[in-house]
Image 1 (cartoon, rainbow, N blue to C red):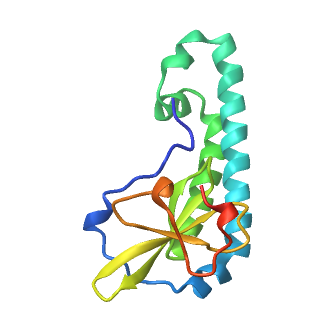
Image 2: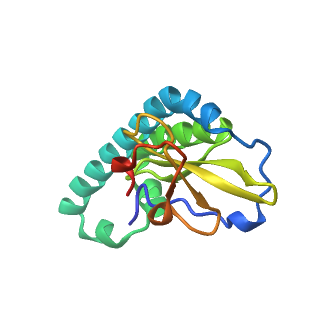
Image 3: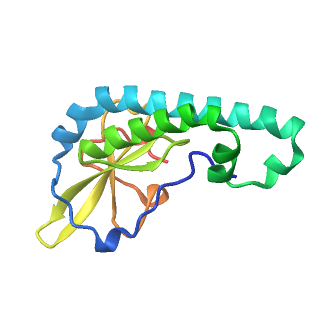
Amino acid sequence: MSIGATVNPNLSKLHFDKLFTPQEADDLIPALEGLMRRLQVEASLLRRKIGELAERDAPVRTMELPDILALHPDLRVFAARMADAASEIASLGCLLKDIDQGLVDFPFQADEDEVAFLCWQFGEPQVIAWHTIDSGFAQRRPLPGARKPYLN
């Protein structure tokens, strides 16, 4: 069972309607902080409820989330709230990459021929790093003038 796992679409085939500047990404951080906090709280509540069920009902331990939700519809409210928050993040033009780490990427024009991602992690005061589309958080590179202690 995985709740809040990394969201990893095949990015090489995506077309991005919006390309962000670092400032445009920074302007969204207050909204993203609230959305990410909601998402993480709901994921935590859902995990706790499933953990309680698993203590009483051993088969739940090996079930996939959709099967658990089908068997226990009262849990759907947590999943629905998570989906709503994730949808709001997507509606801003951002890509939710990891709920637990609080990772959000913003497509941006890295150079004339390359689209890359500005990378923000929940808790960072601003976007301080970027990475190529084919790499990820561990390969982040600092933006010019970024405070490096926050990196990785």
